[in-house]
Image (cartoon, rainbow, N blue to C red; front, side, top):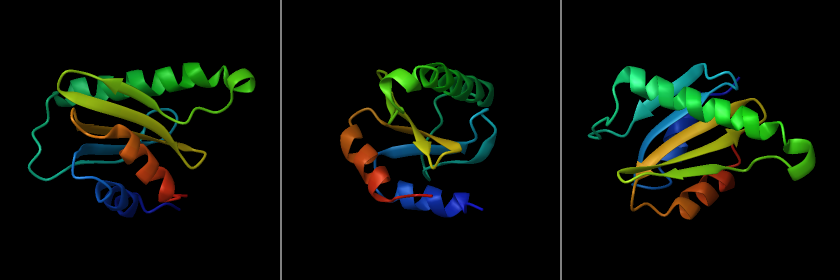
Length: 118
């Protein structure tokens, strides 16, 4: 069984610009979620849940093309105030990471991959 809190801490330590990390199953069930200390949430709890649902559903839709284009590595959405990275964790989970808009998302994505989280 995965130690979600330990995974959260390892990822959070890869870059100071990470705001939020959520680990969920492919259906969007949250296994662990926490903000960086001192970070103000920009969305209400309901809005945060809806944003996660949209990201999970989009990931599922893209996965239908997997036989032709290969497995998804990550999806980046950049907004005026944040960036959102969605990427697989092992075979059965998704990482949903939000960062400050000025964050180097490539560094974060590569840092998470180098952790070899399973």
